[in-house]
Length: 172
View 1: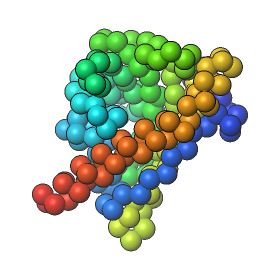
View 2: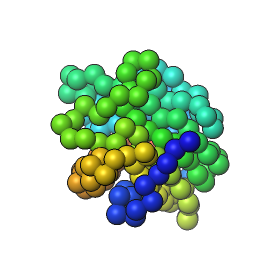
View 3: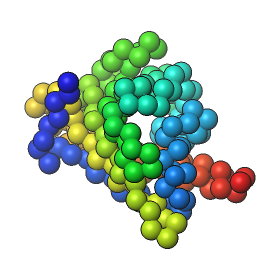
């Protein structure tokens, strides 16, 4: 059972619009081919190790970022096709065991994310919120301190998703 920090000051919020139907945007989270193309920082290259896109399933990936190899994982919670996706994200080792973030600050071991998808006139709005799970006060404060950087990172990641979606729509 995960315990969330319900303090709104420690909640990360990112809103991004895509010129694509929400079904296509949502499906990009459940396809290994898609995730290999767009998930992660702009300069990274991912390799999906495991993708079991169902409630309780896992997405385990290897990320090569500027020559440094890291691993990460999602454990999926609620999945309501085309409307809602929840998962807990963590850095991991090559066997999907949770590890500390490879940074010099004490970050939470896990972050819970909720993604809501809505569409109006062919434009999908993705609203992502994230909160630390079972984090100490020091970890929560570190998470707060990098909020702007994390928002920018998700922005760049979602820009990669935009490129992927455009190519997908053009090839249809």
